[in-house]
Length: 480
Image (cartoon, rainbow, N blue to C red; front, side, top):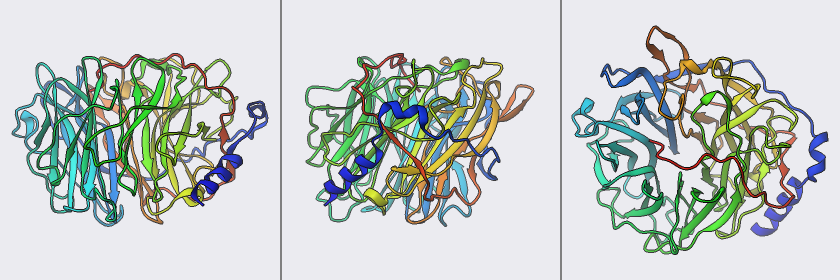
């Protein structure tokens, strides 16, 4: 029955490519959404650009939402520390703080910290934040633990050492899974972008050996998700091909199978020197359907600007042709990038509730001085077949309001959205206002009361042409 349902949804999504010219051109609602500040950079160390908070991830379990993010961005890589913000009442109120024991700003040995991501282990009732601790020669993967609902955190546990990048973490929270309670950390070795996986069976206290997929995998930005049957899927951006690929484990992380193609990547480099790349955003629903979103220009003639596109899989080894989220028409001037996809994990298939946050330029033909950066949001209640009208959460922002890095102005290589069961969506996002002298104003905020997840009439457009060869993709490099 599940496969039949998916087939029906694929048919509903499929439109001829020629039909793109007659799709309804939609417009973003430009009334900004009230937001609540949940954290602000308190540090004053000379290495960083203050007050800046960038690159958030979130995770939801029950009524608890935990966010983690960089605090005090450093030009050459990483930040002064990792911050956290936690709501235990479904986003009504928030508590925040900063992780101990990582950087010298908080009693730790590391110079900077980067790439924070959040998970929850239901078996051990522990929240986990994975991050990078930067040294003079590389970066270690660290795991910080909270055993009281994300309200206080212990010193980090060293998970992997070396010159590492783009870590991610997930736990198996399905009580009927044969691997319930396993947690999995993904990262890549900077030299060659070789992807590795490690497993913990005790709530992140200890981690097993580093394992590679069969045949190897090179890339970065992997985001593991766990199906209800315990299979772990790891979509990632491949290094030497313009592709999103995926690999899996069916034995609880004892071994990892060979990679399969999700889709090629056709990516338009966004204007203004903004730091941005087509890293995937991955989620799973209650039936085990995996969703992967990224910024891609395949639907635009000449690859002139990016849309957000999504591919799905129910079979673990094959992925459906991606569809374009109908934020606006393919003839618009809007450039969309850095999606943060959220899925209500109590829903599935044709009733899956999706919330998608993204950043965008209203007009992609701009310069560093003229580009206007905005935050948008759109949702679906039928697994992505149709979508609501998009809403502008925040903006416009001028790029010079963002901290600078060796790879351009930065709000984050990734963002995140968490959807409460049957409830609203909560993206925790950086929103900038004009600096005061050399002091920035880029705190973490959340839409007050969350964002609606509702039914919509804007039809997604399935890609029906041949898989494009991929083009204009920024080569993978350290993204710390």
